[in-house]
Length: 477
Image 1: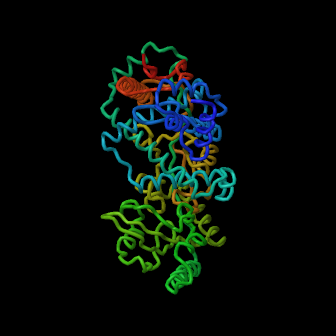
Image 2: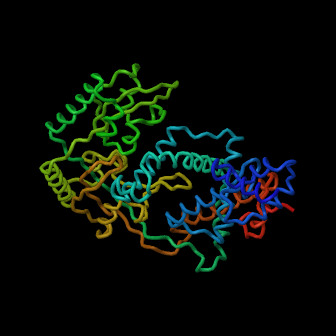
Image 3: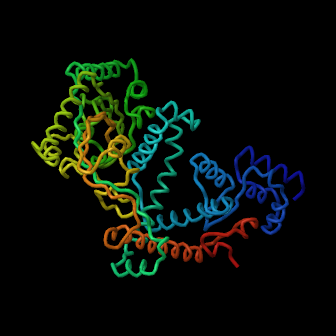
């Protein structure tokens, strides 16, 4: 291959976005793989627009894939163990192994789960940034672009997560395993348990003024009338006026969802829609008031768009609710009724009302509920109040944003505080068991990856063969 052909291949790669290696083979004839690799190795790295750096099975890993992960890591402050030039392509390769096995095992992720997960991620980002506009400015992407870029990433990560869960579902440990694991462990290696608290909560949402509810309903009926008169499309109105940050930029559109994915009141109306040209009546859900338009139906799943409007709470109603909660707090302190009774009969919080008001967290690894919560895992408004309370004390009323995005008034009681300490078998058996269980799971997954590598075709660029990889066997002898 002469210099002119090499330059031509580079230009074609830049214009058409195809990997240089592929074009180099197509241009040179006859195609000799050894000659090609020797020629490509002579191309200065700064001249390469993109290239295949690894092949795992029948999947290629491109230089651009690695750079994209590197840039994202820098934005999010992710630190890599070892050299990122080695660790990043290895991570991508391992993910491809899991994704390949997930496909063989017919593991699937529903589109509604993907849409919901992406929306949750974007909403978390919006809360951190302070507004959609600030988030878009920071990431230099529109919300729609973020949603599109996150779609495949979230789906693949969920497939990998489910595949790992399947691999370790039968891994278990006994109390004897836990005792033996920690029996001779040096003191400085014993896990440190951060401060944990047990908190009870009562919340009440301020009532909306009747005239405010009437105003919101009138607005939604006006939107329906404008669409029916063909003055404007439903999607345009959703972009302009909907207060659902997860769907407004998409014209109010959900992906395909099942009945169980939706608020019950919303689902009852949405699943009764049959004509895409008709708009639903005004629907009240725990998120606010909606109008809904059917887009499509596939079996027991539907695709709809909606407009959400939320009534505004007046200062008078907020003050009235704060006074009412202050009175509740005083009655609790005077012993007129217990916090458990107050949670059951007064609280609006569905998640804690039937659990004596006790807040709980879900262990991401085991999926189990626990009433012991690390301070950092509490809602920020609750954590600030709890930090000032003595055990058994009841707070003054304060406002917070609940899991549905609504402003509520709350009071909390600090039921228990376990100060940070070295874990012990008697007091922290579950913590120590989780350490041993996670260790066994990590070993199981590591061994599976090593075995999978043995039976998978792997080829990599020469410059990666001296890397210190986490998993052995990548470099074939």
